[in-house]
Image (cartoon, rainbow, N blue to C red):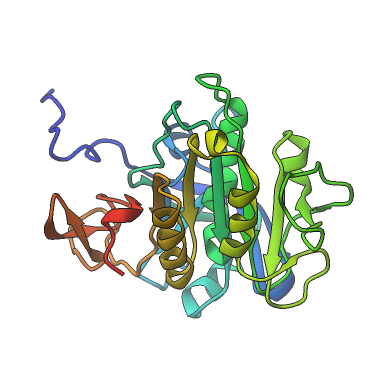
Length: 297
């Protein structure tokens, strides 16, 4: 067998399988949580990676979905998505016992640095799943004393149980009282924000909520902060500016339309600046996680 090519680290790491649908739950505002049995993908998935799913046998184009949760022992992978277009609408009709083709995990995941254990995780809309995956992984990671804070923003109801008595977080305003119960169960503090008047959510952008916290902690604590984020482009642009303002290391996960998702078509290429040079990089295999300071929005 040939040795792995360091120039193509994704080779040999992506698995293709016919995955059985184990559960498929509908939530408010056309949101769905899909769980499939895909053991090879579950074993190799890391926070920030995604999978390319066949939505319907009649549709040749797959759809990329961020991985939200995995159970490597049980062999399942879970996704959160909102129906947008005919592909995901077809996917929403799949029922337990059905099979669909899953290609994954794909992409470079988030990278952690024990020198920055105070992790600020920011998720917005369709960018929420990677942050939940990362948060759950931190709860199991013994390499450092990780201290994550998860802040989520959405303009539609969150498809998770909301904690009634969340653990306190220094610096956050009283208007931010809603938190995610699944994270509370893991001992991870979280808060939610919205512009849609959702109960208990901070009335503003998730980056505004992050600023409250960054201003409240000490300079020594701030020196240990690293930011990880995923969400729509306007949000990521604001996260990039916030991280630069506070001189914080920051990684962002980009989402782009793509055809092959394995680096062949280059349809998901984005412009970045690295070492002073402008380059085009593919979101699927060169990302989806990039250093925020490198990305040209």
